[in-house]
Length: 146
Image (cartoon, rainbow, N blue to C red):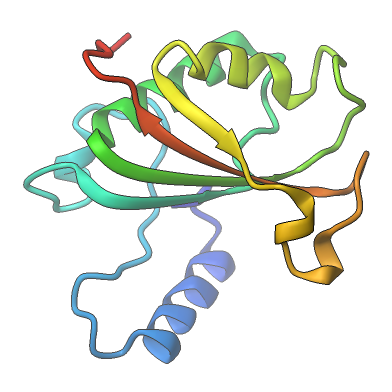
C-alpha cells in the first residue's frame, strides 16, 4: 500500500511481477488509511498472513492519522499475521514528530520487536537520524479494534 502515487504503484507492481511472477497471492495495492472496509477494498476475504508497510510513520505528531493507520492495521491483521514496518528515522529519539508517539499507540494493540541494526544489510546499519528501522509486529491476543 502507498499514498496512491501512480509512479510508486507502477514500480511496486513491476517489482512483484519480476520477483514473484508465479506466486498468485502477492499483490501491490493502494489503500488509504482509515477507509472503511479495507479487506473488501483490497479484495481480501480474510486478514492477511503477512503485511509489509514501508515509510508510513511520518505523521506521528498527528493523532488522527496515527489512529487511522492503527485502525487499518488492526482491520488487516489477525492474531498470527506478521506485520513488518520499516521507516527512516527523521527525528531524534523523543522528538514530538518522531516515530515514538506512533509506536506508543501501536504497542497497545501489537507486540513489537525491532530488528537489530547489525542484522540489516550493511548499507543500512548506521544509527540516528536518516537510519533505517525495521519493526516486526503481531496483534496482541484479544486486542480490540480501536
